[in-house]
Length: 369
Ligand code: ADP
Ligand code: MG
Image (tube, rainbow, N blue to C red; front, side, top):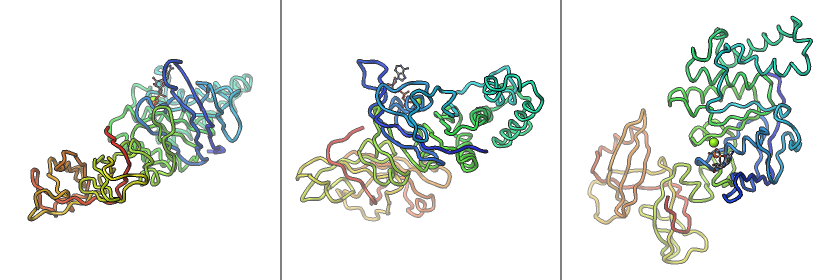
């Protein structure tokens, strides 16, 4: 693949659809570096799709600048931005074969410049060759003559990828591309996309509401909430150091309630330094990821010990166990651990265990979801 991976940058971009409502996108600034995958994650309605549409040129910002490779693209029409798009349900043309669907972008593009040339055999051969390369890239060799209705959902999305890549885009924009697929196919395609991106190195922006997907395949993450950028950073960084309770809880952390006493944050089983500026008696929340909670057997439990939790539910999920615990104050805690570790505890539902929370994040205030 010959493309020149380029950065994408939004500078203070605001987009308002309905004057009375909060902006769909509000003063958004971030950069998607070249070569890699930048994931845009956040709850539904956060403005993720609007950001992609602004980059593609399907929408224009009310305020701010969109730059591709450093240039303001305000006056660059969509077909000249060099963007390939794949949406959740990027409808393929039902009456066209796989090969025709993929070639479509190439022939349309050729029409302006090569109307006459197109009739020439060499140009047709070139397109055919290119489509064959693309079919190989998306692992659909031999599917040339199938109609979309003769493909599985995952295969159809791969054709959509091939069509998006056909124009040798500088930037690949993916809006929940696996959203409509079942979990197994989704996981497979996630792996596949990772490989594809490594091969093509095309700068990719991936919108997803699935934080696991984002953390797994991207080098850079942009978390959006209510039209704004809540946090940006590497997957490890945002996961380890969420800047707010909302971000922590969006990334799957447990929310525990507690208070400050003598400079310490006492939050159920969590004891940590109180956040800066906290006074005695202030409410605090601690956020702990399910895999950062360690359980130990409570052989002779002391009633009233804040480290005690009751196992409400334990579910085996492959090689791991997901445990739901109930604390004395009514808070629930999700715990995830390797199956052998759980088995070693020799406890079952209804029994008590001690909790120990590693790397909690403590925020001042009373946050409830
Ligand atoms: P996300 O993709 O994160 O779910 P969207 O970008 O689709 O969010 O939408 C952000 C907000 O903008 C939502 O409140 C949505 O209703 C609104 N919105 C998006 N597109 C339009 C539109 N074309 N007209 C009016 N409102 C829109
Ligand atoms: Mg969306």
